[in-house]
Amino acid sequence: MISKIKYEYLLLIIASLWLMFFAFLLQYNQQTYIFPDSYSYLLSIKQFFFEFKLNDHRPFLFSLLNGIPLLFNLSIDTIFEWSLFLNIISWLGIILLIYKISSTFINREKAFIFSLIYVFLIGSLGIVFHLLTETFFTFFLTLIIYQFRKFELTKNNKYLSYAIALLFLSLLIKPILKFFVLVVIIFYYKDFFELIKSKFSILIYLSISLVFFQMYSIRKTYGIFTISTIDASTYYNYLGTKADCFKNNIEFEQGHNQRHLYFSKLSLLEKKEVAIEDLKQQIKSNKVNLVKAYFSNLYVNSSKGSASVFGCDNIINTSYFAAFQFIFKAISKTQNIFFTLSGVIVSIIILRRNEQEEKTLKIVSLAILYLFFISGVSSDQGDRLHIVFFPLVIILMAKFFNYKCIKTKPFFALLQK
Image 1 (cartoon, one colour):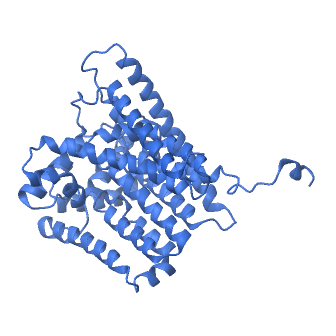
Image 2: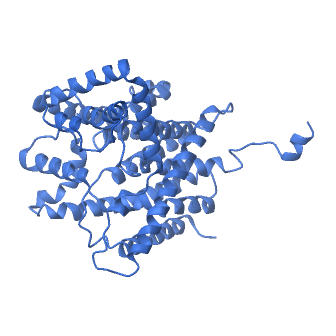
Image 3: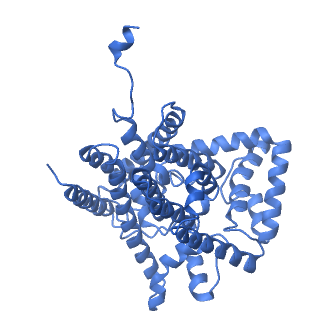
């Protein structure tokens, strides 16, 4: 019998070997492709360390952590190397967290197998090699679920305080969960109000203070009291523009249309006002195309492969590159479709069950559905918008396909009725 510590070591060894082999096949050490969003993250790091101001789109915690090399007077290029290191550590951490959470539902052997599933998710691994928030955010999200699970098992308030504090801090990496914070507080409202009176509340107050620091800084610099101004741009340039394209029967081209050019020339305050007014007008006079655009985005986000794999070039002209790139493209697309559909279906089943399920399963289900449905505001990002909840899907599947979770009656018992 393999001991608990050896299972974790084995996962790290397999994951590390696969990461190196994957990087070798696609020549990631030679690639020069940089995601457009990576440039904005790099800009936010430069603004934070050189200009001592926050970026209006990118919250400061990601900039702070990825800009650490600049504290030692290292070059800008080292940021990409440091980011890769942080992403690899986060990716390995996600694998271990899936194992730890799953092993509280099922035996260690099965938890090991389910953890290996994440190791071989192409989209989740490919994004590791880029200066983007997805890997780091996914680690935070999985760590939050782990703390919720620890609280459920021990009833120790410190784990709930860790979970909620990390949830607030995650807004300073990727502010997508800002409405989900309210869902969590409502879901744990009894425990939450007891918690804020305890000694552990200091962690929550500290994390909230950092969020308010972000909002105050944005207000002071840009005139808008918010965590990030990216919401207006995302709606207007993706969902709103696609709905307008449907209305006018023209092809939607991301970043290459008149609306985008017009919007890019506005001030931040004007962008917010224009986006709000545009949404009102779309709901009033173009609601059918707005809904059509929303579901079109969901479809695109759920059916595309890894943009990281697509962006690779055969730099050193190996004979096997094209074959493996094609295979990884196909696998990443299939994985996106499968894990998105599985996540949505299993989450709905978990939430609809009449029996009392563990709270962790329900909060995981709510998180998956929240991230899935909110992704419909944006589009054309490959699998980036959905890979963040794939660890949660694996955790749900580990429990759902365990006989302790599915208490279905035996087939012959049903025949006797």
